[in-house]
Image (tube, chains in turn brown, cyan):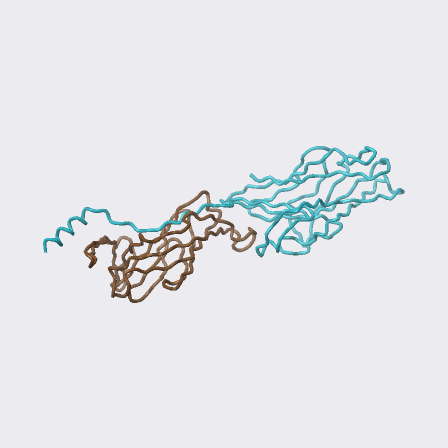
Length: 161
Length: 207
C-alpha cells in the first residue's frame, strides 16, 4: 500500500460509540485500516539486547537479540461478521534494519517481519469483536547499529474488501 | 437523523487515534572482552555458542639448563605446563604443547568502528632464586605462530622488558585473535645455580 493513497474514514460502531480510522485503498479493491490495538500490552517493554552469538566471526556474529512478551488485544468490532486479513506492521525506523519474529498461541499466525514491511498474522472471517493472543517476540538487530537505546513501534492493520 | 449528524461533527474535531505498541531495545552487554593465556575456561567452543569463564590457573613456562650448557650462548627453549593446544574458538589444534603457549581472546562491542583492545604484559625486573640472585627478564623472548597460520600475528614475537609494562598484542574490534608463543632464554650469562622464578601479568584493556 502506498501511503499517499491513504484517506481518512469515520466508522460508527453499533454500540453507539465511534472509532476513528485511517483507511486506504489497496490492491483488488481492498481497504487497509489501522486496528485499535490500544488494549495490547508489552509485558516487559524495555528489552535488553544481548549478542546472539558470542563469536563475532560467526555468520550472525554481529546480531544482538532480545525478547519480550506481547499480550495482543485487537478491537475488530468494525469488521465483525466480515472477512479480513490482519497484518503486523513494523515501519522503517531507527536504528535501521531490525527483524522481529514471534510465536503465537494460535489465534494469530507466528512469523517474522523486517522493519519497513508487514507480515500477515490472520486471514479469515472476523467472528469475535476482539482478537487476543500472546506473542513471544524476539528482536534482532545489527549490534553495530546500537549506538544507544531505541524505541520500536509496531501496529496492526486490517485489510478488508 | 439529527443525532447521527451531531456525532459526526464531534468526531470531525477530535484527533485521530494513532495506535501502536512500543518495544524499547537497550544494548545490555555492549562490550565483551576475553583473554586467555595458557589455561582458560570455555564451556564449549566459542564458534558454537561456548561460554567463556574465569580460570585462576597460572600457566608456567620453564627450562632446566644443563650445567655444561650454562652461559654458552645457545638459546634454551622453554616448555609450558599448559596443556591447551586447541583453540577455544573452534577446537582446532592450534598450538603444539608443551613447546607453545596459547594466547588468545576476543573483543566485541556495539557500533561499527576500528577500536582495538590492547594486551599488555606487566614484567618484573628479574627472575629471582631463593638466594636473591637475579636474571634479567629481558633475557627471555618469544617467537609466535600457530598451526595453519598465515598473515600477521595479533600477538607478535618480542622480548620482555626488564621491569615495566609493555604491549604484547592487540585484538581488533569484533574479532577473535590468537597466537602461540614459544619462549626462549638467551643463555648468555653464567648466573649462580638455582631456580629462578618470575611472574608476568597479562592484561587486556578495551576502550
